[in-house]
Amino acid sequence: MDEKLRKILENAHRAVFFGGAGVSVESGIPDFRSPDGLYSRQFDVPAEEILSRGYFDAHTEEFFRFYRGRMLYPAARPNAAHRALARLEAAGRLRSVVTQNIDGLHQAAGSRRVWELHGSVHRNHCMRCGRFYGLEAVAGCTGVPRCSCGGIIKPDVVLYGEALDSRVLSGAARDIADADVLVVGGTSLNVYPAAGLLRYFSGKELVVINKTPTPADRAASLVLTGPIGSILGGEPGREEAAAAAEGPQKQ
Image (cartoon, rainbow, N blue to C red):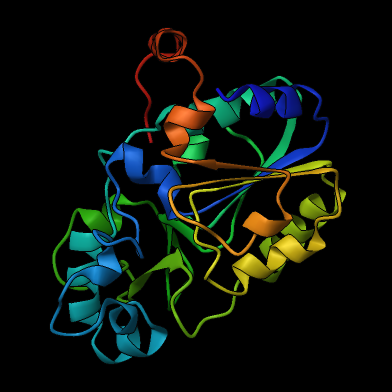
């Protein structure tokens, strides 16, 4: 781990991590806006349109075909970044994780206080009766997943055209406003309203970790460029030993 970053985190008491798709790339989940990301690929219909509420309602079967093939990675496991953040929380340095990801890998790594701004693939509900279903109800079938009552099972992920959960949004804003250190990682900060949460931060240290420049770089006290797992995870030997001690992770 970068020495400046280590010192900042060692002195933190209420740090918050704000992350995006880049955090899970090292777990084998593609991001969205990089040259190799989901939005750079050619589909018959643009990915942004497929992942909208309007498309879900009008072309439900086509939505689920894309969703299963491009958004679900049930075999993915937490990487060095996820595990490092869980350890920081356990050590009392990190108050919470605010994530734009829907993969549940922060919780799989052991993080307990996680604000999932865009929902989770692990939560699904019947649109008719409200019954809860796990990931397998969607991933393990073909066509449109149906509840026993006949209703459509919809993933609890925020689609384009849908509002963010107000409870999650306000909780994330409160934690960021109260943070003494904010670490922003694996995100281009181009997605709103999520990226707008940074305006609530008034703490001492703003750290940005990303492969490419972000709008927050100029205000940051420390900018680190590269894969976030390598930067947050510490020395390779130490990280591998910690991962082995934790044993296999399950989602």
